[in-house]
Image 1 (cartoon, rainbow, N blue to C red):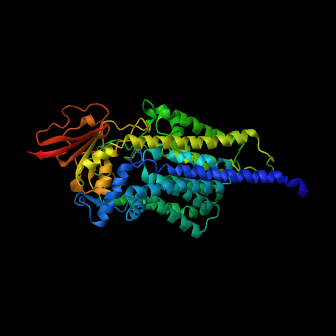
Image 2: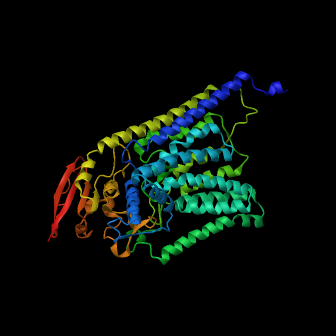
Length: 526
């Protein structure tokens, strides 16, 4: 009997060799993804310059060396605290940008590791680990949502802890859930909400009695109290900027009713690997990753209803979450990073006792194509970053010509990048002046509620989020009180208006022009 059940020695060795090869390729592919953070000196990630500028300003405020201490203050009670605190700590031993690159790289490694651990927690198919790597570099990464992408692996870890707690609730695990939830809250509020919803949904799968269920929900109730406490703090301290145009808008905006609302049917899949439909071929790769478990003959996990809950919540976000809510833009799109890890959980691991001694050519081919897609995807991003860095070398001369420690305004007529395929690649690019030259650039994230460095109430500039950010041709010297600014960083791919800086107060001179950029300086004022 033992002879019948034991696979032939050659098959065992072949299986062991295949497992080693898969592990080597997984590690090498993960390392390739980690290299993407280092190719471009200034990453082509939409908001990243603003976040680097925030942390550089925070560093100077903490050390008492900031020339801007009279207009901003430090808000430590914020859901962005942990990512900023990590970068701040490292900024004492390395430049801020390098610190953030290290943190984001380890967030990516943590995302892959936590995804594998999550897959093991639910007994999912190990052959699907390939699905855990490309999705990190989708919408949230390309838009440079630094606090969000740092929080994502922590969200996956929280879901693991929440599942263990749901399976076997104890006092110590309840305390652990509460502690992990507090950490996650101070990493990013949206990831916190998503992970807590999934974690609380696990409980009815394992606890059916009403009294026991109520007791196991206690740590989540306490985490809800934390949210209430934060909202009370915001209201008590008037942290919402007065006269914000966004406060007059709807609480939530769904794009279903817009002219392209039907795009939501497929764009969540696109956002796992890209931001624009120009990258439609990437979406074909994402669709192939969804098809891969079926091509491999993986079986759906019908034994564990809890394995389906993360995907159910993701689908609910996909179909029902707003595009904008409570002043947060690109809300549902950023959750695409969780799609593939949640999808992996739907397929249970193969039954090794009944597994065929040799895998079919279709399985080998599917896994080989997954490897090729990962490498092709990372290779494409790497080439784009290299080309982006070359294209933007002339911008360095503008930074050199601007005297440090001055206030500047960014007018971005052309925020898109044909290389990166992201229409907002450059919309915060001028903030490298703030990040590296102790300047201060508007429009500034100090305006927004979650950020650590905020404007003092009596130093809020006239410039508000809105038309000028999307349509710089609406620039009006007096409406934005432009005499506040020493420099004007202007990105344009077409000739600028002839009378752009005409005014009756100050003289404005062109300092330097390089491809796609011009630097102007306010000089004497009447």
